[in-house]
Image 1: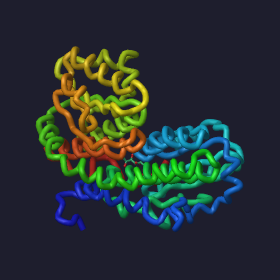
Image 2: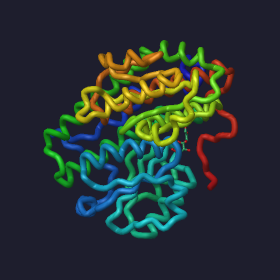
Image 3: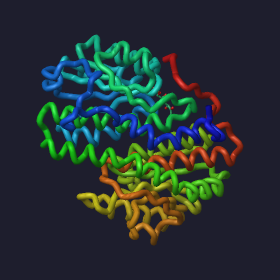
Length: 369
Ligand code: F6R
């Protein structure tokens, strides 16, 4: 079943271009408009939604965190992202105009299921974004958007994550279409960009040998910090989670803007810092700000590993290593920048002789609270 790979995770990492492609498949009609068939919530209800709350755990929650940037930008609906186990035990403001989006690979995560029930009791409609057909969460939801990534066997989530991001984007564009937030042409242009992503994911994976070499050289690292901004921020969190889970190395992700508010005190000679650099073609000045962050940590002795877009020569002066990814619109970039982080964690764990499919103390689906 591993199809010649040394682990399920290695295979699932390589399956990601296909997973994103499959998530996109069959979602438009002959006119090119989005049709999300399994969304059994009537359009009138979806038009009245005044808030979205994404509930999920772990990697699925980071997918939700990415989705917030896109959906608020496209639909102008406030989006909150909350860990399912926190949502359920406070007193969240949920009404019949709240749309809850539950994201789960397994569809069986107890914390997420309980949060779904909690939301429904308060009159919210629930759409679940799930990978596993026939699982409990979609059965109890008002509607489901399956990710179609195929079975994910390795405990650490990889292809489910990129599919979850893709599915939330389809949902965001669908809501924008339904609610008239965007012109048809704009939606079509974004769909075209999305359809170009699988080939770009493949390109990143084809370049992964450099990431592997660097990862192997870092097998005795004891702490790695991850910095990102905008959609790169949840990717920094995800990169840190992968490294903790697989390689048992202390890792922490930060919003790059937080650096000077505390975390920079951690930087000492030799501290590895992985930085996800926003596109220099982005509209605002985020690129320059993150370049300054690289400079700041490098000046204090950090070993800087940088993920940057092809052609971004600004990073070279301050990077010890650069992992290049193809150019893509900012909102699409998480689908690319997460890949080197997955490869890095898997390779480093492998270099330590660890079982990357079955990390200690973890289960594939957490069916207890
Ligand atoms: C991380 C990981 C976990 C899951 C989380 C949610 O690699 O696998 O953090 O993402 O337990 O699981 P699902 O998506 O099945 O609800």
